[in-house]
Length: 165
Image (cartoon, rainbow, N blue to C red):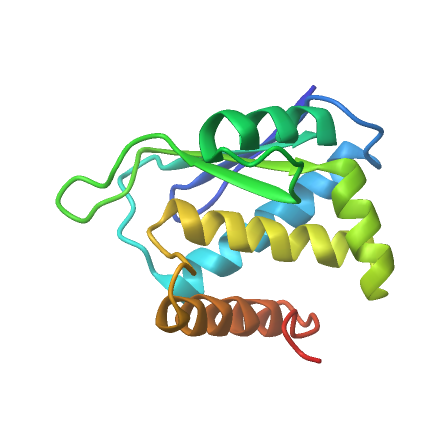
């Protein structure tokens, strides 16, 4: 199953349910397009013509395996991003990469934080997209920049600050 939406600025967003009991795919796909569109507007990455990103809705078992294989962490996680290729001359794409979400972890974390599932998925898609276009949070300075950008993008969408106490 797949739902895609080419965006006016040339970026395509495709949402696929790979595993797990996710809510209605078309509703999530529309939220994913809005999240990526807002992230592109705010972060302003240099994207190649026809840039595309895939958002894969999966489950804990799959993300645990990927986390173990690629990050040497034997646990599931809420979101993983896999860039298709490094930027060339500072330009990303056209294939940006994949953003994967683990249903059980995402559902549990949203519930623990008292956040609507759709809002939390939006935040994770924004977070994953920023990784695909070069942002990271390995150092304190990187985290301040990336988390600040995520906060502004969520505000642009009329959603809560994901890092507010």
